[in-house]
Image (tube, rainbow, N blue to C red; front, side, top):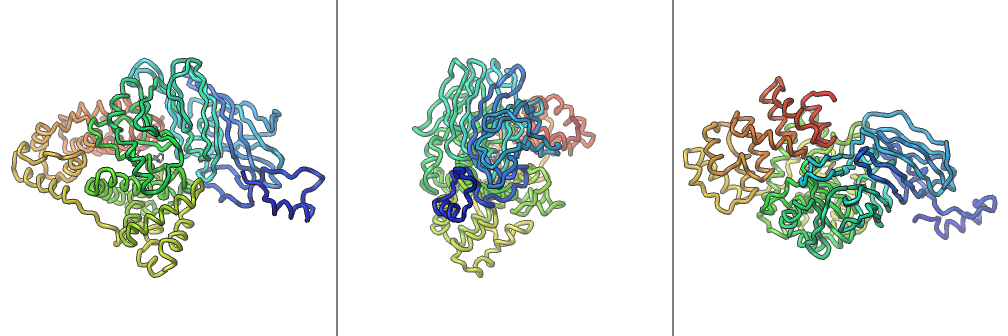
Length: 625
Ligand code: BES
Ligand code: ZN
C-alpha cells in the first residue's frame, strides 16, 4: 500500500538514486514508520508484513496445525532480513519469493517471548513463505475432546492469541503495532465447521476445506480460529450467533439485543468498520469472558444466564470494534487505550439500550473491583499506573482491572468535566482520525490537549491527567457514581442483618446486578446460619448465574459455609474462565494454607483448562508442571 509517492520518485530520478537501471521498487517501508515493538523480535522498519496467506490443515488426531504462512512484505532500502516471532513452533522450510532458502535462523528461546525467526532477504524481496507445524506446547490452542464439549460427540479447537500467543500457532510479527490483511485456507475433518476472525461460512462444507478473507488490516493478536460442531443462527441482518447445536437456541435468546447494541454503538461513535458482527459461544473452558476477534467475538457460555442479564460482555466486545480493533494500542504498555476506552464505550451502549440506572450499576460494581485491585497491588503500586512498564515482563502481568476500570473512570471524569457533547465529538474524531492505526498513550494525550482541551494547559493540569496516567492509585477528582437502586439493596440487607426474615425482604424486580451488590455488601459478621437462611430463600448455591455463583462461592469459602462445597467443585471442574477461577482458588488457598483441598480439586480440573488459566493457577497453587 505504501509506495514511493510521485514526488519521491521524481526526486529519486533527479538525484540518480534509482540505480543500475532497475525499476523502482514499490514495497518500501516509510522511514521509521514504526516504533520498535517491546514484546516482539520483529524489526518492522527493516521489513514488515502487509498481507498473510495462511494455508493450513487442522489435525485433531495429532493435535497439530500445519501448513504454510506466506507473507507479502515491505522492506527498507537496505533491508537484509525479515524477523518473525515463533514460540514452540516446528519450522520446516522457508521460501523467499518462491525459492527455497537455507538462509534462516532461530534465535535462543526466551521465557514467554519464544524465539526470533530471521530470514535473510534483499531489499527487493516481496514475499516470504514459512512451512511450519504447531507442537504440543502451543499455548494459544486448546484441543478439547468430545467429552469437554456440550454435544459430547465431536472434538473442538479454539485459539486465544492476545496478548502474545499468536506466535504459538503461526509465525507472525506479533506486535499490536503491526497490521496486515489476511486470507486463509483451512482444512478440517469433514463434518466440522471452521471459523476465523474474518468473513465466515454459515454452514458445514462436506469437503472440510474453508476459505477466509480479512480485508481490513489487523494486528496478529486478533488472529483467531475455532473448529467444532457448530451451527449458525441470525439475530439481525448484520448480526448472528454460532454455537454447538444444543447451545444455539439459548445463545440466540440471550443475545437477542445484539443488533440493537450495534445500531446504538454506531449512533454514538460512527460506522461499524467490519461489516458483520457475530458471536461464537465456546465450550466452558474458554479462559476469558470474551475476546474481540474482529467480525467474530469469542465468548464464554458462562454468560448464558437465561435472562439476558450478563450481555454487557457482548457490548464490551462489540465496543472493541472501535477501541482496540480499529484504533489499536501501540504496545501492551498502552493496554488501557484498548480496555479503558472499551469499558467506557460498553457502558455508553448499555446506557443507550437499557438506561442510565442500569449503566450506573455496572459502573459502581466496576468501581468496587478497582478498589480491590488497588488494594491487591499495594506491594507493586507501579502496576496501578495507566501507562504500564511491561518491558521485559510477560504482558499478561499488566492485564488487570487497572486498564479497564481506572481507564474507564478517567474517561468518565473527563466526560463529566467537558460535557458529553464535547467529549463525544472528540471521541468520534479519535476513532475516525486514527482508524486502522495504532496509537500510544503519549499521542493520545497530545490529541487530548489539542482537541479536547483546545491547548488549555491549566485545564489539563486541573484535570490531573498526568497523575491519572503516570502515577499510582486513584486521583481525588475521580468521578463519583451513585445509584438509588443500590441504596435500596443496602437497606434490605440491613434489615436482614438486624433480624428480618429473608423471605420478607423486598427483592422483587432485582436484577443480577442488584444481587451482586447485595452479596458484596454482606458484612463480615454474617453467620453460617444466616447464610443458610439466605441460601434457602434465594437459591444462591444452585444458581445458574455464573457471576452470582462466583460471588457466593467465595463468600461461602471465606465463611466456612460448607453446604456450597459440592457446587463449588462442580463449577471448578467445568468452568475454565480465569476471572472466576482466580478468586475461588484464591479463597480456597487462604482457607487451607496447606493447599491440600484446592490442589486436589485442581488436579482433577486442570485438564479442562486453557494455558492462560493454568499459567495463573500453577503459580497461585505453587504446582509445577
Ligand atoms: N481483550 C479482552 C480479553 C483479553 C485481555 C485477553 C488481555 C487477553 C489479554 C476482552 O475484551 C475482555 O476484556 N474480556 C473481559 C470481558 C469484559 C466484559 C470486561 C473478560 O474476559 O472478562
Ligand atoms: Zn476488553
